[in-house]
Length: 137
Image (cartoon, rainbow, N blue to C red; front, side):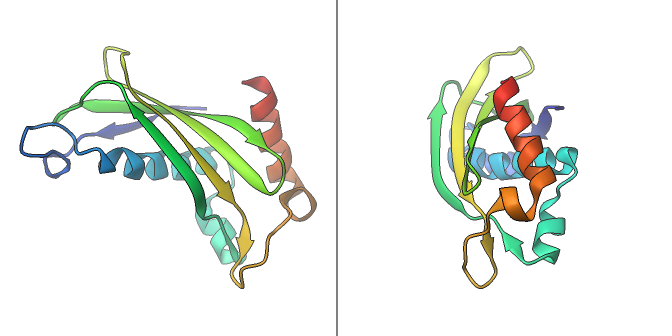
């Protein structure tokens, strides 16, 4: 999978000139959408079919600051997927390859009426793609 690249925008920085911590979570979402697109399972495709994937947990460990207009590269690894809960790990690095943030997010899959969707049963190709990535990491 290709890394996602985000260039820090000026408005994402605080008075000290550093990227505000809340932006890293936004970047995780950008990278996650790109990751699913690369898998061939876009968020738009799921939403068109009535599937939503809310965040159930999130964690960030900030290692080094970033500033405008620095490039940040985000790689995603599937830590685990058991059909109801998906856990993704994010490693964010700067152009020099230094880790600036390590993070994770957990997600479930729901129908728009709020019921859980069993991905293995209803979307077996997507389930297989995520499990293949989980076992190859």
